[in-house]
Image (cartoon, rainbow, N blue to C red):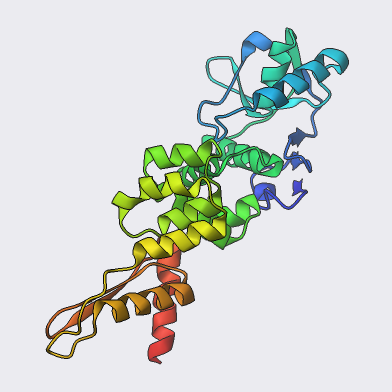
Length: 291
């Protein structure tokens, strides 16, 4: 039976009967590796990792020139006769830069969904993904495999809340995603940015947050969310400052965006949720209050 190590890929044993995931996320096979021509191998265009650090690649290339490639990559054979990389694209790129014409590889059978899952396991184990790559990879994994957030979290060895927080970053528009992807904003800054209710203010807030700590960014978001003070209504309804304070208090307790609107004779309280799993938990929590 397959097994996993290092806390990631907990569900991989149910997918492969002859595959082991090493502590570094590399997929291994009981079959000995084969030597394949570099020209017969191609990368997986759908793999979650898009950015390769140039300096780290240079160091790996020099190591391969000196010692050769010690750890085989993992591939699957395609209908066109070529081999698609499942795990080890960074090693394959460095080996190519080092001038190798052939490379050791484990060949296994895997579906598209399994390839996506294995690629996520390897990259998350190595912590090679930037926050946006991680979020997009998790979303792709959920879509291709039909996983819920909880199932995806189990597969990659993350908590469900960590997966939910990662997926929240996809609510940012593309320019702001790029700021997170290239490191100008951290995940903590991005979450503070998402709490800014007025989306038109987010771009300016992002520029300011680059020079702030995460705590300072959170304080800025709270200031931007404050509404102008208004006098009490003649009909006795609550003023805007009170409603805004209640919204902020509930958001702190519930960990989600809360919106309160009040009309002359009626009002509404809106709770934001993040995915179907989160909605179900929210529904059960509300039912518990009513019991």
